[in-house]
Image (cartoon, rainbow, N blue to C red; front, side):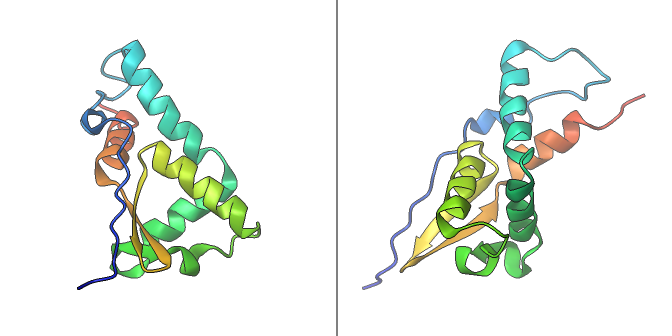
Length: 120
């Protein structure tokens, strides 16, 4: 029997993945603007952006918190920032034993990139 406990956290809104047309194509609805703003706001903090980058660029597509926590702040602060990234739907996590492993959630990242793509 495995001692692994999976703790998958929900993404803010799974429908946010194909969310929005590029900003040059049409005006955003209020709901789409709020969803996208929450994601951009989560990434607006330099520590969160560094943590997100470390997860995104880590070999194998996932990173243990033990491998990414050296960003110049205390461990509780790292946990706080990772929680904010999960709440914004940018990261997913899975507990394995005593460590938590993080992955970038592909849908919201694609939505953010699509929003910023110029169509003209």
